[in-house]
Length: 384
Image 1 (cartoon, rainbow, N blue to C red):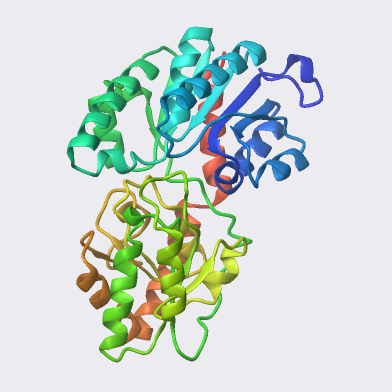
Image 2 (cartoon, rainbow, N blue to C red):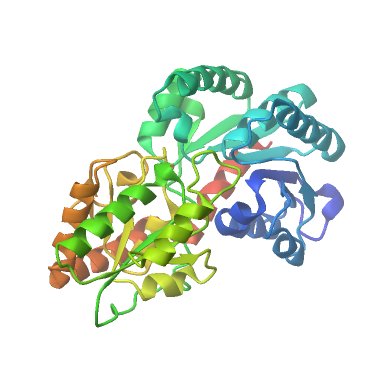
């Protein structure tokens, strides 16, 4: 039985390790606050970043790590692993919650070395390395698979998956017993903040929101915008998001500047007011082939009552109801993407009906309270 929240000395210590402070704030902050309210002594470890101040402002102890999302420098990666190991030795958490690939692998191995009693490993998508198929990624994939096997081979472990395809792939590749796999659909959305509003009038706005990575489909979005403009379709196309210098698959600053100057798409950069951006959009597009878990922007779009065009890929198709809340297109297929966007731009009644169905889906499946409750139940099941 957990001690009362005021009894800090007797509380179970929970450490969440996430690669990026901003990602923690956008995807796991509500869970951390709810866990503290439930009586856990909650600590956060991430790479330093824009979200660090907000983490501390909420009274959550923050421990900086030398983690990078896409870095491959072996010395830096070894230092990150050593830092995590030392942090576990110092904090001695009863429960360790690891989110995204590097924390799961480094933290999972470090937890075995330091005898952490219980571990939750959250697989937020398998990522680019399990989707791309070239000599380098095949070699990296073999290495990552072995690392997953080591990190996830332990008692008192639960691996959280966001879609069935990832669960089937990793339980097979990493030999994770089915009994240790749990399904939680994404990180949830605050339905009070992301509310359905009427579509704006005038020229319709088509919005892409994501990190500007090639594998997120940004080139296909720009190509589809060009095709639709050249065929006389009246619409605004906007990119919301930044390049990711730590990721080799990021678009370049020069490309972004070319798009901005060309006027084909509007480049808004990173935005904190995503709910407002979605409310000012008529259609949301995510042509990703990244290897998603359950893309948060598709959940947010559903909560705002917006129809979606996305790819028939794991994660993307799991965040929607194909044909009811979204149209699916093949990955890397700009002409198919353009045709799907055209279909919904030319049929506003259908688009709005899909938006109504999307909001109903969000209320059934994605409410933040529902997602948090599932996590807390997992925590309770792992701790004596």
